Length: 215
Image (cartoon, rainbow, N blue to C red; front, side, top):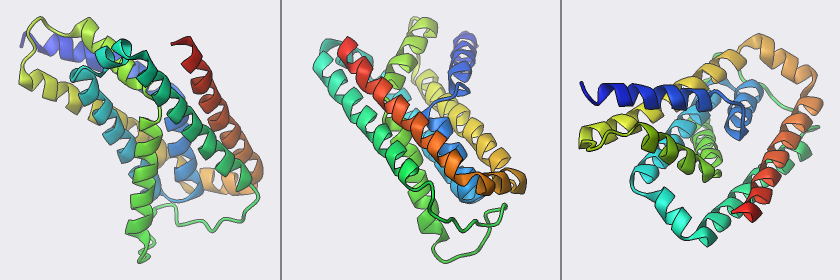
């Protein structure tokens, strides 16, 4: 019971950050609205697993390692920034390509559905892991609320909280944006929507690259 309040404090602090718009939101939203509900949800699970990986890394002391070896943090930031910019360029260049929409329910029953969902999961995971600053944020929040002698159960509880928060939020985003209304609107304005999404991803990547010089 004495570790429940710190766990709730961590959950509340992280929830605010999870719902803040960023590259993860852009990727899940675009996947859900442009492809299918199944692929959007798969990307959401990728985000959740990526968040859990960062939580584990933070608990394992990644923050201390990155602060002790600034060059490593710079390399990770540059790699993450280049990856986000690459995704943005790909989205921009594909803005005028025609798109065959799946049914809003995402239950087309196509033989390649599992493979496509797997790619969406990996894309979500890679997008989440492209920003190493997330590990620093997690570690900072953990340090602020961590009890003096945290148990193994408390550590596992933190990872579970991160997984549930990240996954549930992005699943909600995917479900909301994969309905027929948002999909039809996206089809009507696909070129502009993709260019905006691509520009946002590129700008986030460049912002991450620029921040590498301030480490």
